Length: 330
Length: 170
Image (cartoon, rainbow over all chains, first blue to last red; front, top):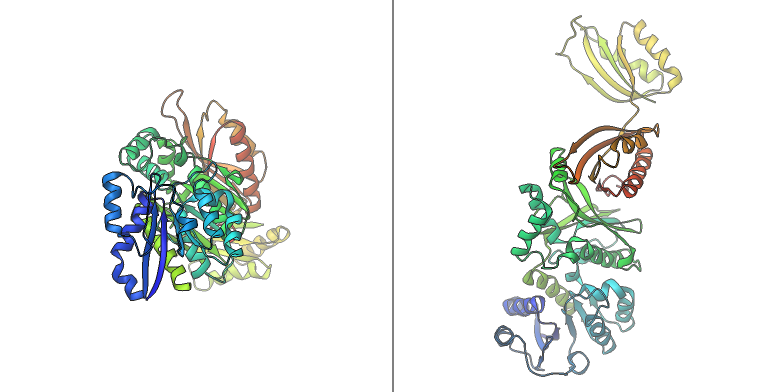
């Protein structure tokens, strides 16, 4: 049995999803020969540390009842507690990447591998973080940052190893996809579809980040840097959102066998997020909140994958897969 | 040049070969042949639609040869606009002079707006238009799209183009 100690930094929907999936996968992990122990958990209000492994069930319960995982304050899990992998699951901050950025820097400095769902630091300082990991001989895995459960980076870096990727096109924001799907199906105006999405918890009260294409652009930047080796940031993306789209435009598209989707495109070093016409029977024409990515390569041709782009357990699926990748290669 | 021709063949064996072999002899590259044996013309002949690529200079010689061998050439047309793209425009399309937008494409000589549907829900509301642009080749189609992008930016219209990855580089 190989003991792998991890910390979960950020105990919101994603962090709790990770804890829940580790709990539900005890048998599976045992079969893999991995004893996965969470030695530290922290949220914005407090933290808990137990070097022999935290009881995740009671940690989740405490979080539910008291709103925080523990009362220990100011304890620096990343720097001071001995462990192997930092799961960085704090919320995305696109202005300066904090607190995720400092957490990741500290993790690499103190010799820990990083698995993250946090887009901010990667959209702003991808190459710096990648180099910090490489310089220290550490793994840096971020499957959960793009496409939720959809394994885009694993697919390209591992499964499609040896291929040259010409370009990637995809739908990377479930909120926009939901709104456009509903507008098209029900001939609803934009503001009504948005309101429905907000009532269902699919869109946030301030939807700007999603509907203006910012979230899509950030994910595209991470893809471009990771897959094409670019050194791009959010400013390099040509972004058009979905707020101006009319139900009439969707109806005209429909009559001519097209749907309109907010498409992220990385091709020939150019990054674009814009509404585009997609032929109805094209694999990119997925509906609802689904995400999809179509990757064009030299050897394999075109490969398209789609799946759930958000959700606590779905995102945890990507994080757990990254943790296991590291655990198997330690 | 790309030529599309409608030929009328007698309803006896060997006529299709008779019609196609001169095209090959003149170095023509046949792209498609539609032979409808059960759709006879009032004259009792069988119409065949052929599209092929051929040097412009030998076209008249080819037509002569076909006519002399008893194949009637019912129609000859140049297939000029082979590449096509669909786009959607959203905004104050009519007020921003749609005619001028179309003109900018048509006046290039290599591309034309061949279809358009417009939807105007109410006065003062934004309207939406679906346009089909044809051009003589992919390169020219790209240029026509550049013009559309420029016009859309200038007139504050949202231009929705088709996804590209499948057509380019694949």
